Image 1: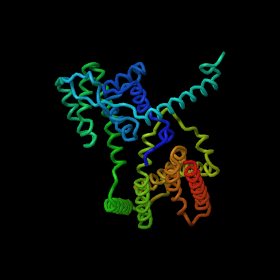
Image 2: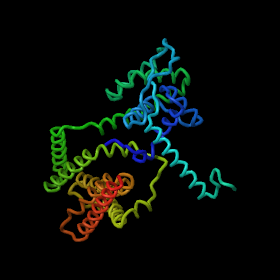
Image 3: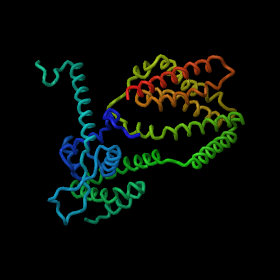
Image 4: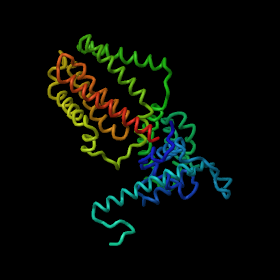
Length: 121
Length: 248
């Protein structure tokens, strides 16, 4: 049975979370996803091709991402690329995971004696 | 697309991936590899090498876990495995009763693993290295968990300290006996940890890991403790499954 609630897929593995975050800015092809993940993590995470497409395949199977057409201004002479975008369910899973991590961060800061973001010190 | 000997070698290495994955993504992976080497040079080659080491086994493993065997394939696999274990243990001097028991247990373990394959695959998908499990959470998850944890630890201690001296008339037999006992202890402890995220798979491992001592009918305590653990595991699993169904 495929999961139908975001909670069924939580916590997301780090590679899946990075890909979903990279796709939250719009549809991208493989190299653009990889570069976006590298940029978002300040170069700490570089996904190789096998890891990236393995992750995309799992996310596609779970209904979190889907293939889509590329942008209209694409170079017709360039290499044929596959573009991916978030589905509605994928966006909900990403929102739920972001909220989970935010709560975790808040709890950690509380227990460490730091003020939570948005609270007066 | 630029041609270079190392990228040609990389394209050949793509054959290590399963056929359907290669058919789906082989072209994209080769294109991405070319761009990585073009933009990152030596570091790009290192990324590709490390990625192959990690992604190929993982993709293969996922393919194995998702493949659905036919009933005939399943029966042939189980019979072959059980027969092989029986022959091996007889050759190693474990005796006919021990050999048959080892064969049956192996078949049961494989059947359980195959039956729970999709859940194991999902456990793999959900592996999260930033979420360590605390020992306290494992031991206090249910009233019977401390008993099962002690049982698992004692089984490991027994295997290491006593098993090698008593488990078989020959060194090979003792090694097999010790390895099997270690596996049962590890199954109980691993099941306790896994049960926190995957109740059914974890419970199955605990039941499998304790069955060995449950069969020691000539002693009082081992079967009694095993019975207590079995009752606890089954009752907890059934009630948690009912709760899940009601919530859904």
